[in-house]
Image (cartoon, rainbow, N blue to C red; front, side, top):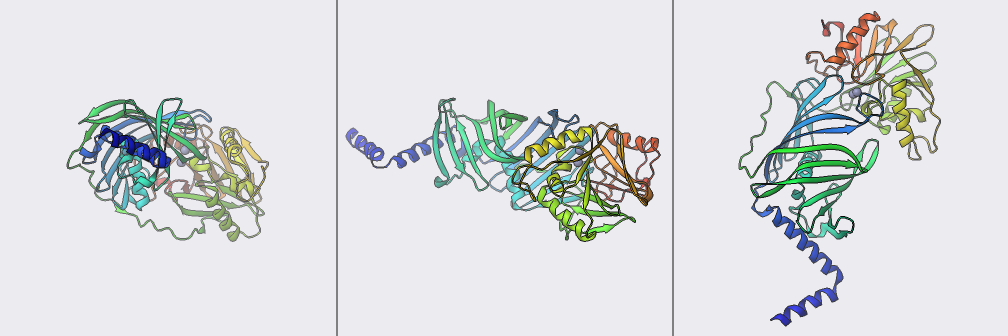
Length: 478
Ligand SMILES: [Zn+2]
Ligand SMILES: [Zn+2]
């Protein structure tokens, strides 16, 4: 009997090295699956996360990697592809958002519980949004990646010489993923993937520690996310419930309505003698441009370079023959400046406060390379900077740019066109597009007092986020 086994093993190793490798990958996979008791699980999970994000593109001080705290309630029924992520996040200036992402097999809904971003509009997303939500939860419970792996998708198994770990590379539908397993304990200690992150792609590494068993399932209670070896997020897992038959999902809040989500073609509409609005930019954003006679001034460059090329095309169709000489950026947060390269390639001078300039030039240094749209060489960038105030004018029209002392972002500024009684601002006051009004936060009050002190009055205020027709009657703070 013993003889037979020996002969059989020899034949595997000698005849086919690849087969031997695949078998040992599967053997590792099997023992890790057993360790995580995957066979016994009904694949329902419910838990809480508290933690913080760390980064420099949403902080108050330019260049400082500040912490933004968050908490999440997660629920998942993997077999039925049902999940919910109830998330609270905080940003400087008093911003507190709470959204519930509800996934139902092929469609995901986002509810704005605090009603201070989208109001009572429910956003819908397609299967990709469901997959993204489930991936968020799988990243907390990495053993879930080991369910239903097709053998052909388990590519390689290598030993990590430095840490004594075994690396299992898996092809997932979205992208490749590597799981690192400690062969002595069978714990997954790390996963790695290439992932998009502002302003490019990074090696994302998620590290797992402080394992505790919950209903026989090992759960990592401490998770740290690194991008290119820099810590960007810490997550502490608590209140884990495994294998509950029926999960309680948050109920659909009352009086919310599903927005069509359908956005027509990008259009520019005249909102003053010289002022134009481009409304309905994805993510509920508004851009404004001003006709200054022989040149154009544009406000903000959100989203990305490709999208801003469309904005530039639209401006040129609206005001043929007029160069875009200036781009004004309210502040350095990445959701306001991500498309700046397209305007630089256009030859625009960037109007920014000094703190904003610091981060915009950093972004351009990182990303202004041969793959920039519209240019193939590093381009000289010109800035018009100011500390408190800057003015552009011709015989008929003037634009004032004001830096406001505020608690959201250092150097945060807004623009006013006095002759049009028009104001454009971003993140000083955001009212949802559906007009839902919520109590003011710190940065709103700071802005309100600034307008009073400088005696800046307006008939129409366009907010970068959300509402594009804010009137004085919608604002009353005491
Ligand atoms: Zn901001
Ligand atoms: Zn913003």
